[in-house]
Image 1 (cartoon, rainbow, N blue to C red):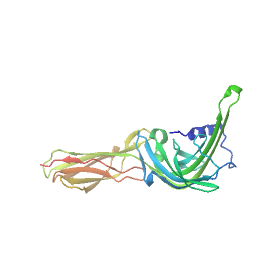
Image 2 (spheres, one colour):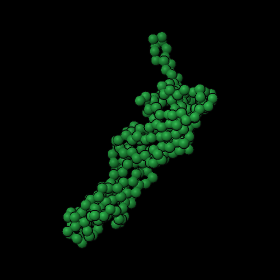
Image 3 (cartoon, rainbow, N blue to C red):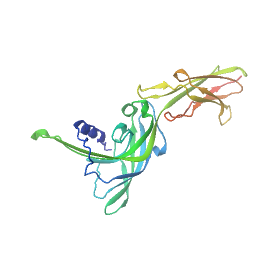
Length: 277
């Protein structure tokens, strides 16, 4: 696939100070990006190491005489935090979108497009503020370079347009949750101690850190049953530690489940089987 060089070119343009003019370029094309949907409307959950592929769909309307070849001209949808002019962070597609023409006229072309954002926590997510709501924007870039210095001359030209859109997307920290009930086996009527730990991705350190002061539900499923029932609610302590006690009554599975927050994804631990004698 053809990789886009939008971010690289934009960074170079910023470094050269060529994008600081306050007036809009007269050459800005008439593009519209509508119907933008990120990750099928679901939150994007990112851990500490694995790259996450995020589908983005939208409708692009462009002038009929404008060619977007994804070599010297580019268009797509990006995510960003902050304001359009002063972004705190941004994520652009690495490859060209797949677009299908759905309508044409003498002056306009309408295309249905699908692109993929690849979010690498090491490259794109840096701080706690990156967990939350991101905005979307359509962009158009065009560039030309002449790096042949045999004649004592080189040139670099780049233009960039962005249009803020109403669509948003949520990026959440991935969570981990463990459970362990002891002793195993246990005598009926005796006390079981159920412990666990709730952690979540820390993008600054690249590790999972304890998630404290969070409500976590302890559930039980009897042997042969198909559904879990709620036993009690536990609050995570130092380092995300969980601990509670219950009376052993029958064979079955114990698990913790976390409903998630606005910044952290939900998580359910695998059931721990306890044999009651």
